[in-house]
Each structure stands twice: as C-alpha cells, then as structure tokens.
Image 1: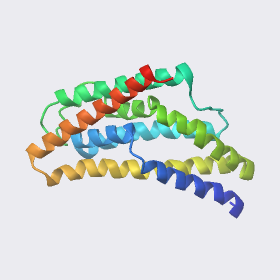
Image 2: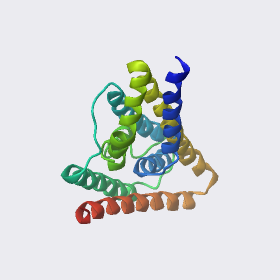
Image 3: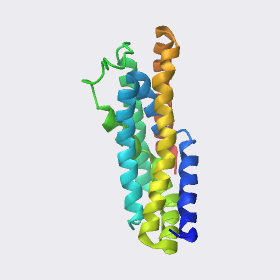
Length: 211
C-alpha cells in the first residue's frame, strides 16, 4: 500500500477511535450486559454489535450507497430504537439480583446478548447518520485514492477503532463489579437500567416532537 493510499486508512482509524470515545446507546447496552453477566455475556453482546457494524461498514466500502436518514425513516428509527431501550430497561429492572457471571441467570430469558448487541446497532439512528454522513464519503475518498482494496482497508481500520472502545466498555463493566460489594453492584445494575430507559424516552420524545 502506497503512502497516498495509507492516509485514508489511518484517517478512518482515527475516526473509529473518536467514535469509540463517544458514549451512546450501543455503549450503554454493552455496559449493562457486561455488568449483568460478566465477560461471557458482555462479549456476546459485543460480538453481536461488532458483526452488525462490520457488515454495514463493509457494505458501504464495497459501494452500497447510503444517505443520512431523514423524514419518516429517521422518525421510525428513533421510535424503534427508543422502544428497544425502554424494553431492555424494564427487563433489566426485573432481572434477578444474582450477579454471578458464570451462572448467568438471564440466559434463558428474553433476547440473547448477541441479538441485543446487534439490535443496538441496527436500531440506533446515530449509527445510520454516521454511515451516511461520515463513513460513506470517507470510503468513497479511499476508493478514489487506492481502489476498492483501500476502501476495504479503511473500513477494517474504522472497525478496529470502534471495537477497541467497545471492548474497553465490556471489560470495565465485567471487572469493575468485582471491586464493589453486592449491594452496590445491585444499585449499579438498576442505575444502568434507568439510564437505558432515559435514553429510550429521549429517542421517543425526539421522534414524536421532532420535525
């Protein structure tokens, strides 16, 4: 890869790292799942989010045309994303207080962690805005400089940047709970559920009252 072709790849990596540092619904769900079931559950949710995000990035890099969602489509995305977050919040508040990662008492209830991580990306309006407004022009520029291979390299670099931040969130949630007592850990889980609910309500209000 030439120096000219390397520049958009490094730029995509930087954008991915910056995106990883911006908290949002996906990070909130990953943190909730890792606190709820330790590394195993958090990793499953991360794999679901990463597989979905990687597929979308690769599709854009291979030439699938995306524009930032607007109008009815954007409103539907916000409604669906808000409903998902509120459902996950209620599910979290109802979950057992057993914090054992190995036992994972929620594995037979509701959506599996992989599906939760995947839906966190698919129903996240911010993710689609990013794909249309940022990722698409970045990959188009990479393709113009070095062809499809460079565009794919930029997509892989962006994936690496975003997953590094998400992995840090999972490890923080899983191992951070080992340093607090059971009562505080229970409060943390409830607080995260309330946070998910608040994000969901915010999305619903934006969808109902927004333009």
